[in-house]
Length: 206
Length: 206
Image (cartoon, rainbow over all chains, first blue to last red):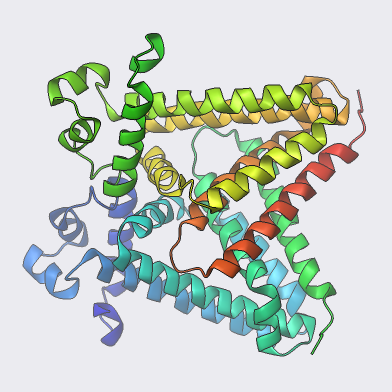
């Protein structure tokens, strides 16, 4: 975790350049030279910040998780957490669909995670943290203790993560007509609603 | 399409070796040398069969589509096409979960498709054919003309393709505990059932 320890003014800019380079050249295809050049740094200097591609993925994930945490803090504080969570997830689906093109980056990282254990570990840690935020929200929505929510809704939290990721990747597949994409997003949102409805309908058994 | 034109006895074996090499080394990481060696061929000979990685993906896709077509022929001939389709999709989810590990290959091809137009074209053609089979089955299930099914259920067919692919990729993520995977698969099946239920409940408007 090179970048998390000390705040550097260009941090966001460097991470953006890494994201873009992975998305364009592929996770394996992007060389350290490519990545350093895109960041406007010498290779030697770049290596000191990021000794490995795993370190880059970890820095990207850390920044994304900070945003996710902020959103879930808002959901927990909302008058109607179910409505706030539902709205937040719908908005996320919309954003992925229109311009905020994280799809290629996550497609690259997903593929690399299945091949390279050190990337797999970073991705699993990220998905596990996001599932944890979801489970805390689910506990609040269903009015049950956190550990009961974890026992009963692990699959629901994994499904939400899977749907959001799959929709982001699918949104970038060039061949789909725009109208079809809007309809597919509508159906993804209905699926998310169905998952949340199962959670909201649950009664505590403890 | 090197392999589709003439049947060769080792065809299946060669395609299996290519699948495995892509899954292990990555789409970019696998060199022509790696691929030829895994197939037990000289690089020169291998190049004559597969002049490009796009040709390999096309051969893999062509073989998979032949299996898909066979399954949908069975569904169309079944006494209860809805039950047959539902059962076929559930079985597919089960198989991806247990051993038949296509996840890493599809993760690689999905990522490459977003970066390389020639791979994107092959993948889009494949997904479009599968959606076509689904839409024909949907038309039969809902008792409506094929073109009406296409207008109304394009998103439903895209969602089924997306869920099956995402579940296959997710099943390979090493960190998930086995119990969680079974529960997630159960939820994926319920989501597929929900999509099919919307189709079955539809009344023709033509």
